Length: 192
Image (tube, rainbow, N blue to C red; front, side, top):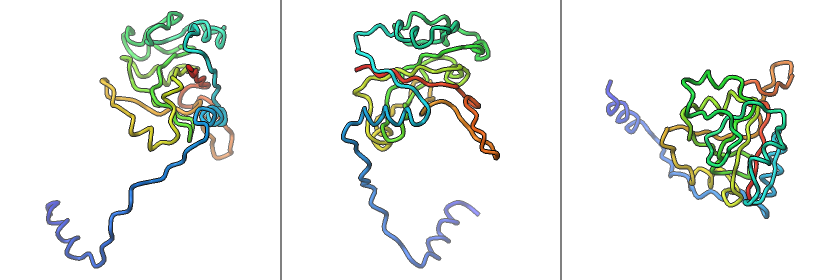
């Protein structure tokens, strides 16, 4: 049976029709969007550092992760990076990365997540690193996911993801495991 024939049978046998729902959703708004984003980011297990736009991000990251030996980043101006995910031969070459520094584009106060588009050749750096540092500008933090999705632009490389705090999972015995599928820790640096 062809698709159109199936649809015709459904239409013919539909006894009751319903109007489309109103899609004008009144989504949540916060009195202080950035403060709520910080609070929720910490609730989901992340850390937040607020800095001035004039601050040296390399120094801030070095202070946050003084023991890190392998720092991966393709973010312009991050000179402490010891490896660039654009220059590795394959994703497995990123194994052993202590910290990945990523540029986030949209932060969402509702759930503390950040849209991180793939700007680098190997997106594995977003998941294989022990810790993530996600940079975001204060003015790019919105109240809710409805606003966030409206701002998404698909990156040239065709991939992006929402990241909210470190990776965590709990098994049937309710034992919480951090870093099971991705980073053990996430620090968001908000540039104000």
